[in-house]
Length: 196
Image 1: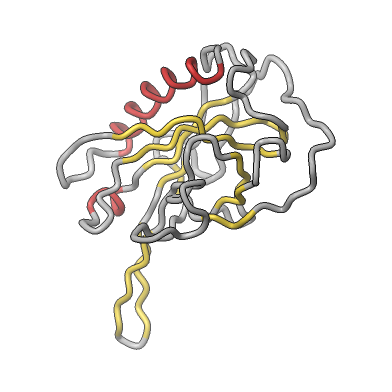
Image 2: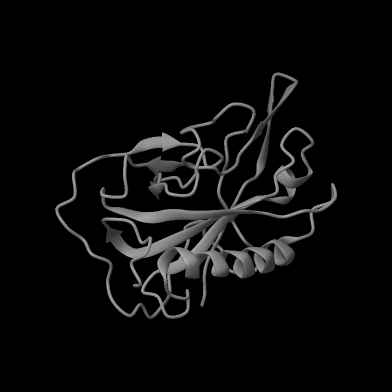
């Protein structure tokens, strides 16, 4: 299955000779929009999968997610670091933040279903290592959450993970991978236990 991923990056801003570091990351529903000690994330694409930041979906879904007359809601702009399992969201137009919805009953493209944590030293293990870890561990959680393997589901599986910058930043120490379910068109309701 071909998927794209989002990763957290550290942005360095220089203004009038003053260096200010702003971190970007993911954690959509923990606390919307730039929570606490965690920096504001900027999605980037995994170098092993794609060149765009928006996650892709399985090229051959078995059926379309249900789209219905869900309540209209624009979502709350939320930092990727503030997302958590159970959150349903879309991406902002610049794909730098999430638009978190009050519930999965609002039409959405992404649903966070698990958080897995890597271990390792201060040196980033590389995009391939993060991707392998995420694909393996998210797939196991996907089966438990949806009731079907990611290979046989109508949904796609992707993730938001650490970047080299957020992994190696001592104040961030980012090791979390947020596993996501993606829909090819806005879906209503949770994928949990759907067996789809």
